[in-house]
Image: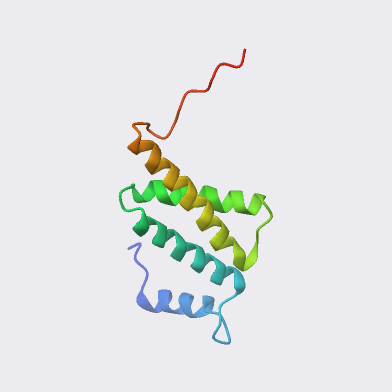
Length: 107
């Protein structure tokens, strides 16, 4: 027995998950926009590994949500946060830092 599904099974499942009425649900649209922004950031910061850019964007989305941003404003807020963080990372690397620094003694 094969683990591969027949095309009819996949096509039927996709047809079932397609939104009715021609427009996707708001959450699906938001997810699509977030993925597009992440892809744009990965292309913009091509000198950094794509996985690092994606993780940074994911953290930026969480931070923007923690700040109370939601809905259609979320992708742009997360983009601003991620862009600032990634630019700081590149600037730190240019100065010879690896993006981290030891904490100063507090006692």
